[in-house]
Length: 337
Image 1: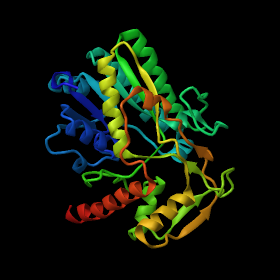
Image 2 (image 1 turned 45 degrees about the vertical axis):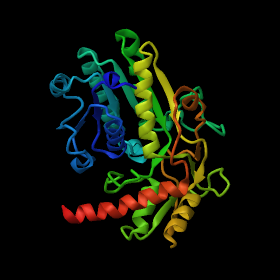
Image 3 (image 1 turned 60 degrees about the horizontal axis):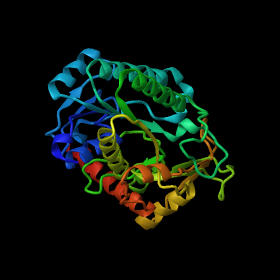
Image 4 (image 1 turned 90 degrees about the vertical axis):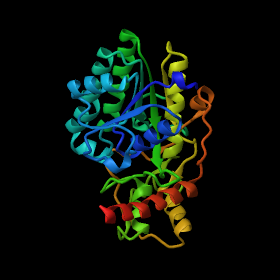
């Protein structure tokens, strides 16, 4: 895409895990980019020094109007929100507030300020527990937890607002995001994270004494949950390509799965960490968590057909290697601060 087509982009939650990788992908590709993040779970060190960082809330219409004007924002990548499935079951109103109500405020501000393109961080949790081997975008959406519902509601708001107000959008439904920037510029830094590969890397580096395996009686080959793990840098690249597609065809919107189409069980992931580290992580078998389906694997046919997306890191051991590399770097960062 030519430089004059690369419009200024606001990344919400750009100091967080996936958002910070999207910022790097945009910046590396020459896009003007700014970040808004309340830093409740994000980290200022994850945002490059030459990228404007506004500390604030995505529901703050006055601040958003200021950012849109100062930065000339024409596109939004929206990552800000709450993401822990069991917590959403325990505290649903938090999720409807952070993920749905605040997204509505952001969409309203975008409409008022003439933002033309909107990319939304959605989730495979919108599908619920379908009895299919691979999920297509047309698989019925029947979420089984408030997290999934909060994201599906935002997808619907975007569809309705797009039809009424003329902007276009892309909803990317993530499967299990893992790994870290191959150059260790950013990674998953949140304390108390629940993502399996992050937790396993913490155990491998001595920050935990075991890894909990939640559920050993699922209808899967080894009884543990099966997920489609996607490298965060491949996912970030998909966002940049999706933005290009929205700009090139402003009269269409897109909804696409983001995964590799290959599932790994919890035990297979832990075996990969053992291989990469040449050590054995202690596994502690525990009951299922509320709201966890047994298997979620994507059918990525649509994104492959729609975008020139060629994943570079679609290998479980590579994902684990990059996650471990970041985990060790994170220890150094925290010692220095």
